[in-house]
Length: 587
Image 1 (cartoon, helix red, strand yellow):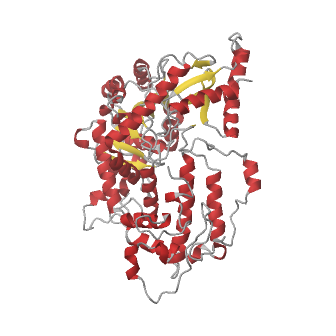
Image 2 (cartoon, one colour):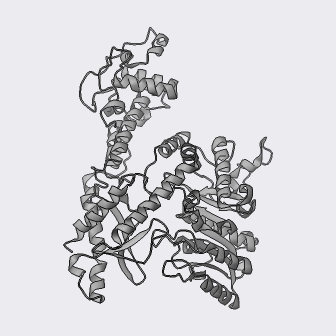
Image 3 (cartoon, helix red, strand yellow):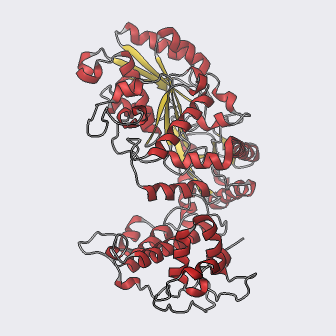
């Protein structure tokens, strides 16, 4: 495997070989890069490495009047710290980069150095011998570095230093032993897509400024709707800035469907609305109700069973109660994979769909966490009934490993998003354009400026195929089951609920030796509640691993493990168990 400072990772750090069959590393990189990138790599190699490192086929095209270049570096240091093409960043600023008229050399060199920083970080990101986190308390970082913004520009040398510092203290979310959140892992194709997206730097509101990305969004959303089970992939949808916003979109559209006059006249013109969701649902349902003026008191929380699934009989009972009070039930938000704050449970969607049909209520499925299981033939049965939903939230940046952010709201009824949100802004959405206006998607969004989130998912899908996502999801669920089987009968571990988890959420207590023979009373609970926070703090200070904890109802702090990281393996689960024991045995 290549490492920083050797092979592919070493740029201009060794002397070029005179043997055409055994080129020096930098020359080999140039030749490989030219194969895929054409002219830009030719310029890059020429500008950074001089004549000796240019690909052979480009030498005849050189300008004979060009000024001589300094010979390439011949030092043996790895990685090489020698200057490239006499670039001294201590005297350069961002104004010396493109679009400066003579900024090409400086720009290519600067970006290559930034790339070197990124590539070396990527390699360490997957190295189990490195820390997941180099933890410092906020006051320490504030004192050790100057984070303030100034009136005068910094040099490019200082900018590169800022880049190194940012990554030095960043959490390695792609590390095989990072389990703290849902969005873990780092996919190389997704990363490349993110870089390309930033390079394109466009907006998703009209086809005229984002033609390829708009078409990719159209194709990808249709494919996702097909997988949900809507015939022919019919319907609508949009990529939004996260599952919370997708859920709010669903609430907004459900309200408009029942009372379209609310768009112009507001909440005062309609009856009091009531939404229903499980007591283990994501907080974004209440947050959406607050933002839309419906109010958090109008969100009724439905009881769940011992595994965290919504109880349909309680849902129907509460709907009837609301109607008897004169309220109007307008939305039921079911959950497919209750959030990582809880058990990863899947609500009984078929029973909920029957109730929604009976009372003519919009059915939304928050599949932000569990939607990815639709890609798995082994596990998609857990979402049976999702095809009956009116709308679905699905976050590929969670279970599918797409880089943040990538969240989709899928809607079964075509055209309702446009009717709900359009404002006919004539400076963007002119009606006499020369192409099909249905591809101007901006007027159905709440945002005007909308980031290109689709390309990461689209490119990864092309690279992996549906079967690649399926393999990743199946592996993560197998690791969750492996963890459960390892600790369910292990001394010092207690499960929060009985039975194998439905998702990768594994909830458990670690009980240190000092508490194992204590009577189960309030004192024991108080002491047990402090165990997980202390172990988590020690994990972060040692930097060895990260996993989250939480209380829930009458249950004191427990570890809540979630697995979505494609780099994780059985050895990392074993390490986590042993590390928890090591860090908590003296408590």
